[in-house]
Amino acid sequence: MKIILLITENSQINDNIAGYKPQNLDLVVIRREKYLRHYLEEYLPDYVVVDIPLINLESIKEFAFKNPDSIIFFSNFKKYNEKNHPNFIFTENSNLKKDIKEIIEAISKTEAETNTENEKKYKLINQQIFSVASLKGGTGKTTLSYNLAYYLKKTFDAKVVFLDLNLSESPSDLSSYLKINQIPNLNYYIENFTEGEDALKKSVISAGNNEIDILLPPLSVLQSNKLNIDLFNRLILLLKAFYNFIIIDLPVNFIILGQEAAALSDSLLLLSLPMRSCALKLSRFTIANKFKVQNTISILNDPYNYAPLSKNDFGSMSGYPVLLEIHFIEHRERNFLDYNGVKTDLINMQSEIKQLINRHLLV
Image 1 (cartoon, rainbow, N blue to C red):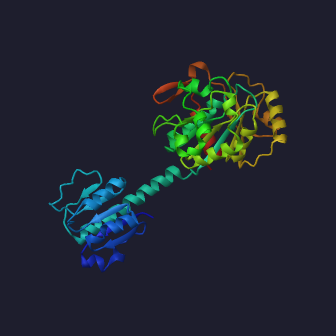
Image 2: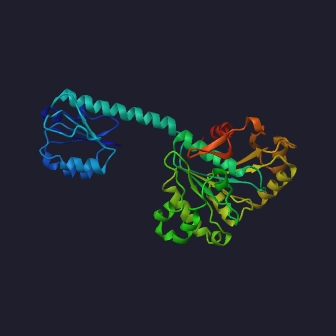
Image 3: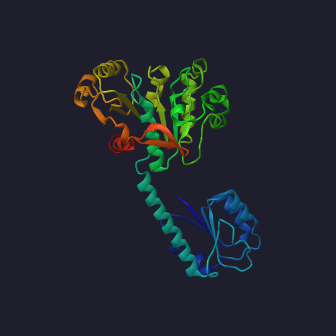
């Protein structure tokens, strides 16, 4: 619960603290300025209400500098020359009981409204790992993975990282689609994992708070082979400390690392083409791999206008009911996602992703 620190010598307020304390906030009251620094350091309040003329502003200015999200309300004492400080708010009246009560009620109301909006916005959000897999190349796996990350970022303004595990000697498909450099990549983290957070930051491609963070694979298989299970688990734990959502684009051959990623995931998205061969391959995969994944979702994508197999027939043959079907998009109807202000080569599937999110993922 957030905290209001009130500094006042008003005996009517001090004698009736219960009448001032809001239900959704803690209220701490002190009477003397000499205890101010101690209380600021101990309670780290989200709001400070100053109802006495402070002799020395240094402690509260220092606190505001270290805690830029905290807000300090002052009665409008003329001696202060800090009215342009971004954390400071000056009220109209001076040392009035009514004024203090109105300030506290306004803070309480603002917090209640903020919490309600956050609940509406994030009511579906828990930290989750989504892995996207395919047993055949050319299914649109990377396109779907990025669309999922894009939707989560743009809709919920969440912290999202895209982890590309398509380990090979050739350039990453994602780097080509996004038109970005292949450096930095996981190579730095693999060689310097003992640096922890610093190694992660130097491995991530970050285009700012409004974009998805990208972790590309190393540029060689030799280096990729150093990313063993233990190191991968360390990486996932580190990512979970900084991101709401981790989207993992798994390798097609489903190497041991891919199996570990699937096992760590909250949802495994299995993407296939609507073909008999893909359904049979998925049926064998089902028998061979018993992952402890909370939510396994079979998705059909038809990027080439094949459609030789209905979703019902595919589900019967594969052993997985198809929960999302993405139909062929005509060339003239295609539009593309952007990354950092640049149009990518990734087809926009946001309407399909919205269905997937609402029906099967964040529920």
